Length: 302
Image 1 (spheres, rainbow, N blue to C red):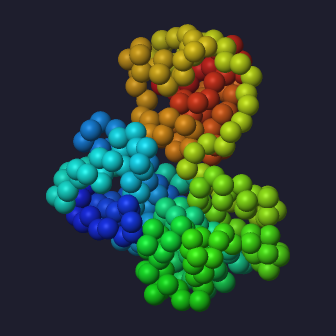
Image 2 (image 1 turned 60 degrees about the vertical axis):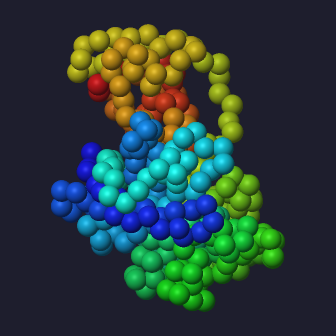
């Protein structure tokens, strides 16, 4: 956990504020484009936000938060109550959406989905790699950092305000994109679905706000042995592993509780997990908020 102080709150678009978090105890942990942090709010909620500042700046982190009108308490608190000077705890950066080397990039962003893409574009340009950004939003006024991007990158950035121009033709974009280009996309589900239909899967990297709809076998009870503590617990069919562990006194850090942030990662020592996350758990790991078990028993490093 890292201690920060809220140094700046700036309105960067309609219903979007940028937060600059200054390290309270010296330099913050390093990060790379695509990384995110968990922000621990004073109302006891934890929310995940992509880092959208400069990775070379070890003194502070920058995130952006859109005010969700159906907020579960996170974005609403940020917009209505957070003020400059507030101490805030943040997690170490995690990256499930890394920018991997490629001879060319096409970046696609929808609305607040610009946040992980912004430092990616900056890094690609700094490395001298050909890169373009197609940035989509309802209107320019709703699109955070649009002016910043246009000022810094000029013709590399194409802004589509759908209330004026409609959505881009993603099939046409795919046809004009070089065959060796990697395509990175973050945005609302409807945009990601359209992009998935247009671009080859092997060249596409996606980050979702919400998990994709999928069907799994019915939930069943299973047993979990906590190797370090020596305790074994039963996970009922109607309860998540995360909730069960919390109820028996082994709380696991968590953020989204939907399998998209990775904050509740556990190391699996034995047994086979049923992975239900949306980010692809690495070998020997699982995310306790959504994943279950394919074997009657799991052993975890807890």
